[in-house]
Amino acid sequence: NGELASHELVASHLDRLTKAGKKVFVINGNHDIFNPDASSYSGNTATRARNASPDDFKALYHAFGYDQATAKDPNSLSYTVSLAPDVQLIAIDSCIYAASNTKAVTAGDISGAKLQWIENQIKSAKAEGKTVIGMMHHGIVPHFTTEPVDFPGFVVNDYAALQNTFSNLGLQIMFTGHFHAQDLA
Image 1 (tube, rainbow, N blue to C red):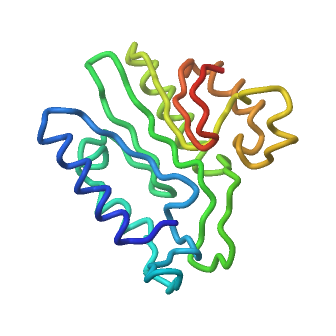
Image 2 (cartoon, helix red, strand yellow; image 1 turned 180 degrees about the horizontal axis):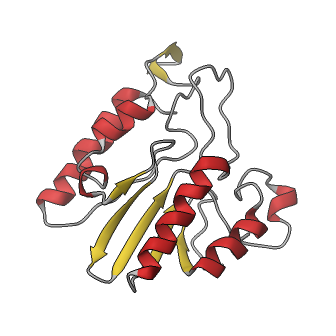
């Protein structure tokens, strides 16, 4: 639930992977930032714990994408990184969070300045002849036809329009999580 201590532990595990020669790139999920449910436990007793802010997230995971970034969105945790001279990864922050949240938010959204920044990154990479790959927490293609109805908030808001926008700009591959499904859509 976005406990700062949990993020610190995850970052230490990811550090072991990079020390073993693996490339690791992260993007936040819906539980990660300003989660009001962040808790520590002693037996069955939950105590409110410090949650992570966007600045905490970037600092803790700086070695896993942020310090290799060729561009960072000033309005979100999104960034781009070159995976190879002709391949660009766009890590997209699709989460909805604010320090004032009193409930955790499951849904995701990409709009406004964040969407414009992503569109510009895709256009720039394509103009350089690069293949563009995306990754974000929320789905952009439903895993099954009734997912948007049965599990609202598990595909990003306005997913059909975003599919068209990204596809038309040349972003054809998107890795996602959130629904915990092991399939291709």
